[in-house]
Amino acid sequence: MSENRARAAALAAMSELSEAVLAVTRHLDTSAVLRTILRTARDLVGAQYAALGVPDGAGSFARFLVEGVTDEQWKAIGPLPRQHGMLGVMMQDPHPQRLADITTDPRFGWWPAAHPRLKGFLGVPIRDGQEILGALFMGNTEPVGDGFTEDDEALLKILAAHAAIALTHARLYERERELAITTERARLARELHDAVAQKLFALRLTAQAASSLVDTNPERAREQLAQVGALATEAAAELSTAVGELRTPDLAGDGLAEALRKQVAVIDRARSAHGGPKVTFTNCPSPPLPPTHDQVVLRVAQEALHNALKHSGATRIDVSLEGSAQEGCGKGLGSACGTRLVVKDDGKGFDPEAAGRGLGLVSMRERADSVGGRLTVRTKEGAGTVIELEVPRGR
Image (cartoon, rainbow, N blue to C red; front, top):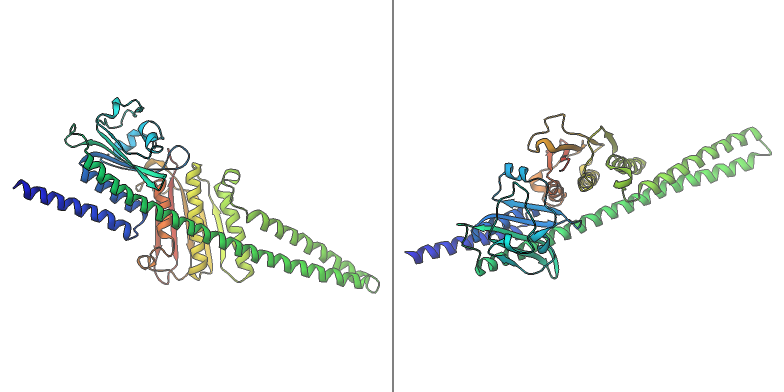
């Protein structure tokens, strides 16, 4: 009988491991894959608590997923953890850490008051070669006190390898998306250059006409010279705008609203010159966001604008930025609500289920998830599209 139970347990473990592997191969969005891997890891090793952290390069975490902790407990714990104590060790040391009692290890730091009390600890780095992309953390075996085993460590290493694949896929996709944005900006720069060149050509012709009329028709020559001055002013303004607004957005210097305004202005100018849709930007006061949140809002706006310009066939695209607290902000985001971005077009719409990764919806949702935000897509074929992002203020 015990042999049958052992066989059933082994089959169940294989099934859970298979589900985690398939999550990677099916190219689900990265957050969903990591969540599946984390839950599988917790179940397979019998941990009371589990976490998966991905560093942000600034001493904290870009992603920190947890299992075994309620929403109320998580809220009471406070801000996302910094890379201190054993968390910091896991971000630096490429070797697994298996401890019978984490609190007795000299590298242990401290916990917030509301943090669960851990004893047994198992941490395995998520690596791409020698680079540490993140780590899986397990706390307390069930029943508490039994401790994690070598087999647990071996299982966690397998799951960490699949987490590395998911994170590497996400990184490659991000690079492709950034390349697409760079290419689009270069094309817009060429269009603006052409527009300025046309104005300069007109200025030269007008100046030549004025020169030829100086002796025969002074009054007409003065009119032409006045036109030269007006054209020169317009050309200088066009050139200054093109150079200034095609720079990489300076979120730190300009702020989110101004960076978005510049993006919209340059796109509207270039598209209007070539018969494209009208693009507008509206800004209502909204609370300041942490730099990471600002970056997410800007990138989602760029992605949504790129999609609308390339695929929607719209005649108008409206971008707005506003505070979200005044309109039922509590729908899942709690008291930390801060800013709402809306990108709306009157184009042909699309089927979200059929769009897949092609329109960058997965990338936008991952960005929203990385800061605890929410992305909503409202569209149907023939009825335009609304992309709405709500981002909390952060802790």
